[in-house]
Image (cartoon, rainbow, N blue to C red; front, side, top):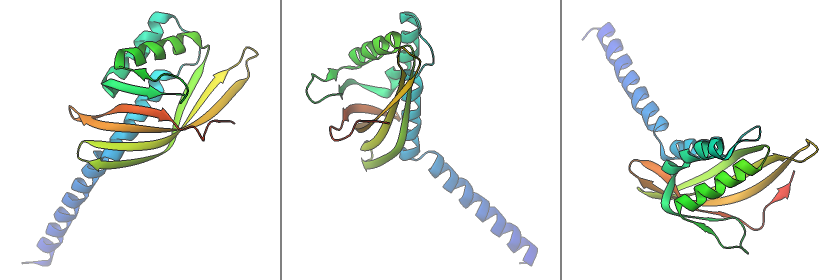
Length: 168
């Protein structure tokens, strides 16, 4: 076999390996969870006051990111918010009642424990604006349980960890 044919074959094999590796990276569960977190942040964030209908429209995108029986525990002393519809209704009220809110997720530590379940621990920064126009940022550490349903990762539960929660 001539050297040029071997070189072409090596290039084809290298390209095929690069495509397969790129696809596996692009479609990895960790990357999918990062996209999920980005979508949640987008649904909750807004830069100005909104009507109830506009807030509901924005938050409705959470439907596909939450399991039907999702549970959100914001404060260990209060009753968790249970069920997708109740979580969406609560998020809508918060979004409609705040003049501005920016949600950002940082440094997710995602562990996929089985083909269809996992957890992520992430720092969540929530920035709001007080009546004087001053922005206030608060950071929390949140632990989430995840499940893979219908080909996409969804949040089954989320809990704000009590040892965190400091004003920046």
